[in-house]
Figure 1: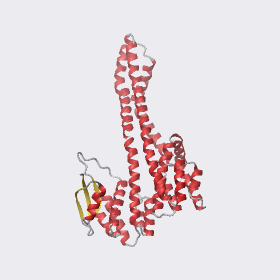
Figure 2: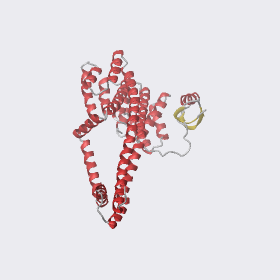
Figure 3: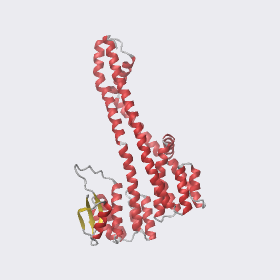
Figure 4: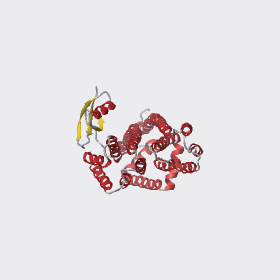
Length: 396
């Protein structure tokens, strides 16, 4: 039976840490509740070398939401819950923010208004959902939905990041190998070629020219690359540049981009509707999470259609920005009055499909990168060998 470590509190606000035997995490949480504890964190202890923890405001937000949800669900008032979280927070920055939020609430501000003062930690979507929970008196329920939303979003991002680690390492090591060959290994052979004399083959002359160019003017090339990168980044930050860049990505990786944005849009909209946010406001908030501006711009027509009483299925269909399967599922949800649940199902479906698509893309990308690097390195080696054979007049 696995052993779970836990961090919990009680109604008096005292913090307890320890371990508990349980067949699964859900059972461990129930056993802690039965003993009068309010579980804040329950997980299997990591064995072996501890991994380096990278500080992230996103991780702080997930921890804050999860722990606050647990405390409110146990019946503790908001101010007392925030006071407990301020005492147990491991992040000094987050501790100060929670204390500031608690101070604002005690001075008469609402929870959502207090959160709004810290936009770097709490995005507009988060604040609007909290405001909807306050208005409906279901803040604890909204926090549960928010926690699910943040966890699923983080899981998708982590999957994409982990899948891209190997291609990134492959590209980096391959590029470094080529640079070392051109700037360190090849110049040593060029000295031998100069001493032996004779006319070098064309591939070798091209290679030596590139090597000398790279060795002599590397700083100019590096400066050009940096300047071009900065200009490109500045260009895509402008509205027109961002739109054109997103149009290019959509034309190049259409299926992948549409699946990613469909999953983001549907999960956000479904979570907002389930939390009691009105449809028009939910659509406006959901637009903010769409990264591709071409697809995001189509949501304005969807919002306009919803205001006219058309619902969202017909306007979404007219945009031609979302996959047919997603539109069919949304239509069923609208017709049965289960739009929020169906949107979450669409998000789950396309997150799974996106994971499969990414795996296939990377599985094709890896051999292409290996082949490309192999051809470049092979060309360098063969060019050197051809030169040696031609100068020494040995048969190839």
